[in-house]
Image (cartoon, rainbow, N blue to C red; front, side, top):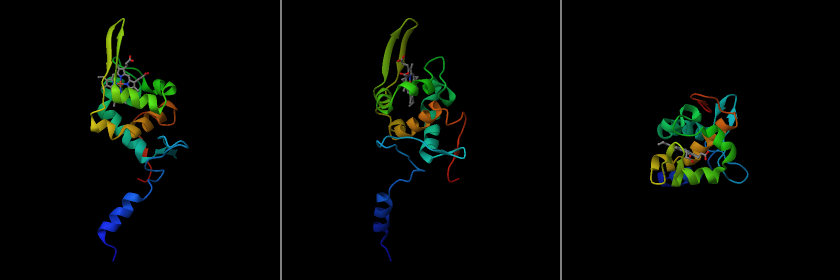
Length: 139
Ligand code: HEC
């Protein structure tokens, strides 16, 4: 019989499959869409985005009166720039007053899922992930 401890170690060491959390050639998070279904990371990103970001950035990342359309922003921002803004926030004095992107660096509900939120928004930005709740691979 295989001791449970060993099983746990094997499970932990097993590589994450592409369906769970795809990465590109540089090891940066990316998304996959097959037959209209998204990888699990992207699906999780959809959920996390709508928990923490949509109040300002609008449903499906399309922007709101408070904050920019992130499907446009991610055409310009790479992963590192994205992670920087979300972690550290940003404050801008504009003609219409102050615009504040809060810092999420101390919020585990966001930081633990930053890569997945990026996956989702990148897929939206590329026009590969549709509006609304996506279907998930393997379900
Ligand atoms: C309280 C409202 C608010 C919330 C909540 C919020 N943001 Fe923002 N965010 C803003 C504002 C306002 C800006 C624009 C700041 C500026 O003008 O540069 C912004 C900017 C950004 C940018 C930079 C966009 C660009 O074009 O440079 C990114 C990326 C971003 N937010 C991601 C997120 C993510 C991801 C979440 C959820 C984890 C989130 N935001 C939650 C208000 C918010």
